[in-house]
Amino acid sequence: MKIFEYRGVEGAVYAPIVTDDDTTFETGTVKSLAGVSEIAKSTDSSNEAHYYDNIPAVVVGSTGSDEITINSSAIPLDVLAEITGQYYDEATGMMVEQERTTKYFAFGYRTKTTDGTEILVWRLKGTFNIPDSDHATEDDGTDANGQEITYTGISTTHKFTKTGKSAKAVNVDTSLDKVDTAEFFKKVQTPDSVTARA
Image: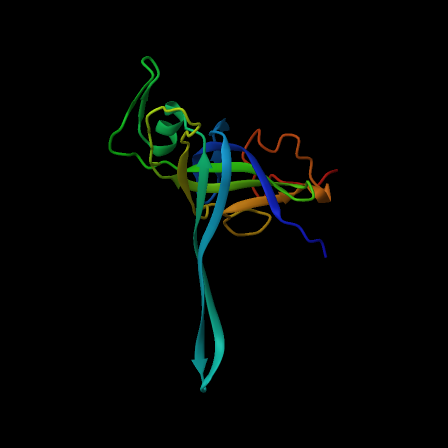
C-alpha cells in the first residue's frame, strides 16, 4: 500500500463541447483558463437501505453532479465571457454582462501527490458559474484578490465504446507509466481516446 497526500495543482484549461449525442462526442480548441491555487471536488451522492422482511435487504445508491470549486487568479474578460455565456467584443476589449447563454465545456488540470506523481484530469461536460469579484483600494500592504469559480460537472450524453456508459471525467495516474501523456492536454481526453502505450 502506498500512502500519499495531494499537494499541487496547475495547468487549468477548458474546451467547448461541440457535439454530445448518441453517436458523437466532439470538443473544440483547448484554451488556458487562469492560474489556479486550489481545485476542490464534491459529489452529490447518497445511499439508502430498503427494508424487506424486517431487515435492511437492499441498498439503493445514486450519484448526482460534481461541484468543482476553482480558486484562480483574476480571469481575463474574454475567457470569462466565453465560459459564462456572455458577450465579448474583440474590437474593443469589452465584456457585456447580460442574460446568459448556457454553454457546456470540458475542464482539465494537473494535480500532484506528495511523492511527485502527477494525476492528469479531464472533466468531460459541465458549466461554469459567474464568479464574484472583490476589488479593494491599494494600500501599503500586499493584499490582492483572485476569483473563485464553480464548475458543475455532469455526465455526457454519449456512451463510450470502452465502458459502454456515459462519463463525467477521466483521471490518469502517471506513476504507472502506462499512457503516453505528452499531448494529454492538447485535446480533450475521453475513455476511448486514452490508450495504453504500444
